[in-house]
Length: 289
Image: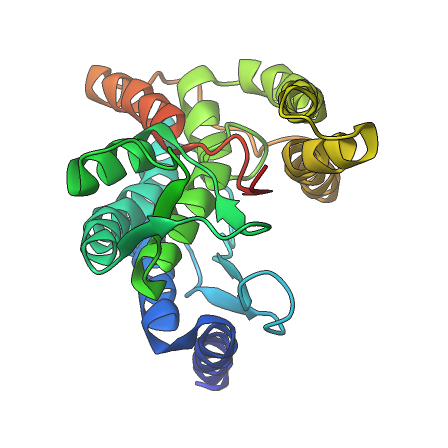
């Protein structure tokens, strides 16, 4: 019983810190997405006979991130069955997106379009986010000096998509890592290590493009380099954090059986990769040039 109070206390603390960061609409939306995400893992894990804990929500001071670092669920024993591993890994992102996408659409409908104030920092586009803005407002945004002034619900849902995209990276103990491990078996170990190394290189490439873009816009070298860090830093940070997570896990994913995924789950694995491509945000935040 005492452990239940730990889970409830962490959840309540996360509600408070996210509320202090962005207000009640933001907190309710983001925490709702996180709860659905973790409930997907928990419910499917229990149905598949996996010994999983309730979620541990991670509150952060509102000055750090968005008042939370998400949540984690402990698997008290390794999952030896590939199909079960796939089901548990995919359930969280799917459940979160089922809630996040409608909330994003509603939040966009509550938002307005207006001029971008000089010096503002704006959120980045994923393919899905850009398409949803076009569907709601009938134009590609940002563009022609205007962008969406996001309602807190819309911004929280955007954060939910960003967190889900990070979780779907097919690396280590992330949800995408579980899905990739189930689909690829032992080959996933080498792929995971190479992808982890590649993340900072992706950041370097994005940063280089942003540097050239800023110089073409008439910025000086120092200002252009500062602008480029908005593309470089997130990928380097993710690479470092995921590298630490892999080391703490012993640099390997717990082994699974030799059986193959059934054909239906193979198609679902491809669908998860497509979803990742649609929601990944190459530059999460950047200042206006």
